[in-house]
Image 1: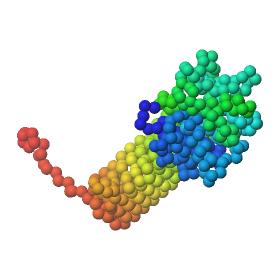
Image 2: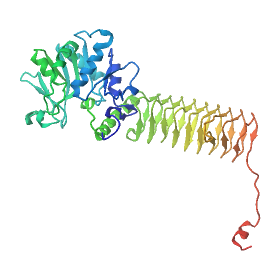
Image 3: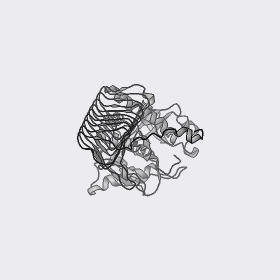
Image 4: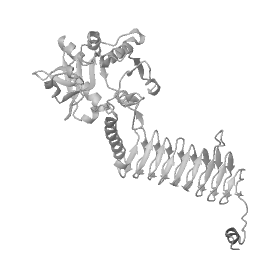
Length: 433
């Protein structure tokens, strides 16, 4: 990845890459989920509370990672897993594996009565993937790595059926095979696929389950591959929302993170980006805007060119217009912020209309302060509300006012110097007078 950030912590549609397979495993009903990390424990900060962490002491390959995971699984409470318990092994850099794919793999494993089942797929260009070698009967003979020429033959590299890095093992079979792994390969690592060779040597059944949708098992080894996977992930997110009744006018010109929630009959117009844990209700319209970790209740309209930052709540039927930025504010039902305004750290009451270029001056250079605007308020254009300040229900402000003191309910607040006209100024300025 050419990055200081660990590969599986790179973001994919609003979620670290590693959390995609973790989420799929949890949704598939895994009793326990163990994630293997390096001694730096960089992944610990992003894992859900019910996911366990195992540390791989040194980078000695996928086999070494599995040894660390098994130690965690068998070590908890001093009791080993039942020998027949299925262990699904996923890769943190194969993020698009689905719940359905995991379930189908388990079903194939059980149907075959296998000690191990490898998920494979057929690729037009299998470069960089381990190849699945089958015997004359079609059973899996072994999986060979191809990253180094010393690991495989030319004939093996021409095989198009590849190992996806996804396996199911019976716990007992895996437990017995792991101590016998060898580093006798070009990279001097413990390769997990060697377990398949060992199990076949023991007379156990090793099966392969072909995943026909190769998109589900695409790996990420660099930023170009991450971009390809992101396009597929984004297309899936759009499809899910549209099937649920959301109108996305131009999916190719729209970005929506995986954890975003959108209600029926809401329309997302082109060039909109919706990030984080944003929640949008029903019958909303979002036009050419950028939304991050905010909440839009039913019937809200945003944009074009709106920017809703974290902590923003737009209550039912409220409207945010053109070139408006809102941050950490609660905009009441039916309220309007039509255009050219910045509203930060504010509470805006029901039915209020904030005139063009209304600004909340929420920062005094040391601390943020909150502004309270009541119900039914009408601010004149180019009003600045210097927090902390409040404007009472049904109050008004005069255009061009800088409001530094509270405005009582029903009052008109005007804070500007009286206009003074200097007659003949132009002639005196250029000397013609």
